[in-house]
Length: 136
Image (cartoon, rainbow, N blue to C red; front, side, top):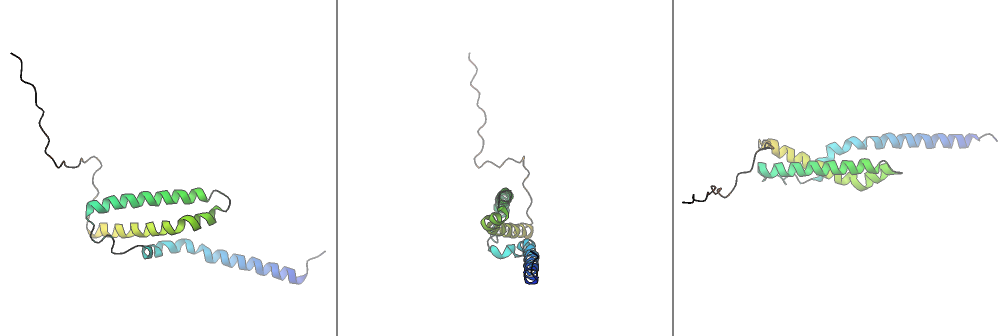
């Protein structure tokens, strides 16, 4: 039985609505980069020194990588894109906003990375090695 004209018009409208919704939602992926600082406290890193900022930047980078890995893993399953967005996207955007603010404070304070081979200075002086007296 051939399809009636009203059902083909209805199907066409459904397809057009899905295409419009898809294109509208595809723009949301780039929005998080510009909105990210809105999810973080702008004054949080104002009083941090370079040592604190370095530790915070490393922790935020690790958290960002962890959330990205969770989002990638979630997207491999059935309905994963939806789960990824619902479960992890808000945290990811908030962490990215904090990382961006920490980077701004890092640049504002003119901080430099600590070399990885630099040993921290000891607070207590090192005791010299004491050798036993020779026997007579």
